[in-house]
Length: 461
Image (tube, helix red, strand yellow):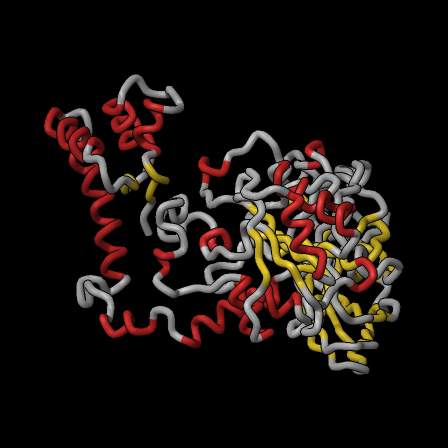
């Protein structure tokens, strides 16, 4: 293999980090003090020029350059680039193929996470009169985020036209399902700036049964996404609260965002909240399918969703003595079906190194819809002598399909080694103690069993 920098990071020693007096010194330090082989820069020849100059002057030995060249050439040889330097031109015809689009949509269908659903506001019925509002419901680019088309995504001038028909929107998905063009008002732009008076939207909502509002973020990547406030723009959140109060009708929020943005009072104003993340250019149809119940949401949060800015660093696996009270916990997610879990049965009440145990739980789908269910096994150690134990830690999971009325037994394996940790002295260690095994604790509280964890010497403290 070979080692390549991130973009422009050699020059950054001089221009950003101030660890070199100039680009020449940064180049010299890189080649003399590290084994880096390649500078990731496509629009600047300063690294090449500085390297050539210093080799010519003897400041960098030619052998050092030969080392990196050899590693790069070997990698190219291993990849077969000398025999076949170009990709198969026939592959171009597969771009945007039906199978790839469906694969992308299936990923979205299994990822969308239902965070709130008061009074069964979702799913929508075909007969519902729905007003759709918000900047993300009629946009492909806002679903795709940064590093699509360009580093920071399409520009305002390019909009969705740059996709040339490769993509969809939530509104297009709704129309495909209902056969009717949706009633839509953008209301505010992606920055939360009003585009129309709220009273106009309230009047438009008079004949609607429900209101769906799409919130989200502008495209960004890396430093382009730096923000000073974790909340979504006030104008977007105020739109939710104002329509809920003025119309007294169920407001359903669809979040299209690349990170968990704080929702403030909109959490309480909304009857239902759907987290669609950044579903990609073909995310519109799966979102619409979820809203109308053609897809039963089965996604689970891959992070802790903070309620306040002070919780931005809160994680599920932090020390057990730390407060953990986010807006929604890691692994949380609702569905349109009622599932019941039996308690956990264990193949052994002792967990020792080299002897994994099995944890089995029975799950019944009481309907009314078929369900894909993520079955997640968490542990909580009662105490840990050398280091405070995690609050909770996900150890393993499986995803199973349950037809209406079906009961399935799901078995998950747990190893003592899974509970090992690194000490301050950089030694990996297992501390013996009772361990609680919990299944989906934030969706199914009370489903647990306890096992005795032994250390490498089969001791139980």
